[in-house]
Every structure is written in structure tokens, then in C-alpha cells.
Length: 93
Image (tube, rainbow, N blue to C red):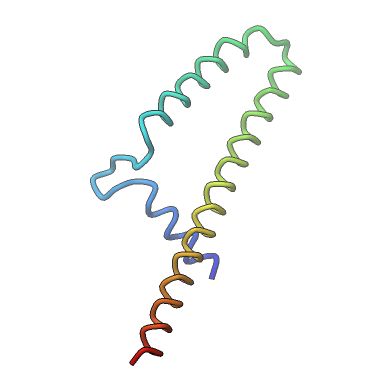
């Protein structure tokens, strides 16, 4: 069941016209994060740069995983609610 929900999550990352569904606040925060990374990276020695780069990539992976898991859990809860509603309607008939 996870893979169809995963595919559904990925299809909702952008709208049909190619625009994103993410908020302006998200893009502002991402822009600020990129600026901070650009400022910090030159201040680090080579080993520190690699370590910081790995940290940023890992954090990005965690954000993606959490987003997908949250979407999946919400989808499953919503589907369960709909099933409960349909079961109750069938009992009333």
C-alpha cells in the first residue's frame, strides 16, 4: 500500500501547470537556508566543508522522509474515515 501512496505524494508536489504547491514561507526559508550555507561554507576548512555538506544533504533527506510519512499517515487516516462513514451509512439503510 505504501508505494501507491508514495507515488501519489510525488504527483502532488507540483500542479498540472508546473507551479509548486509549497507556500511562500517555505521558499523564503529555503532561500535563507541557501544564503546561510553560502556564507558558512567558505569559512570552513576542507574537512569541515565535506562534513557540513553531508549534514545538509542528510537533513534534506530527513525532511523528505518526514514529509512523505506525514502525507502517507494523513492519507491513510482520511481513507479510514471515509470507510467508517460508508460503513455507518450502510448500517443505517
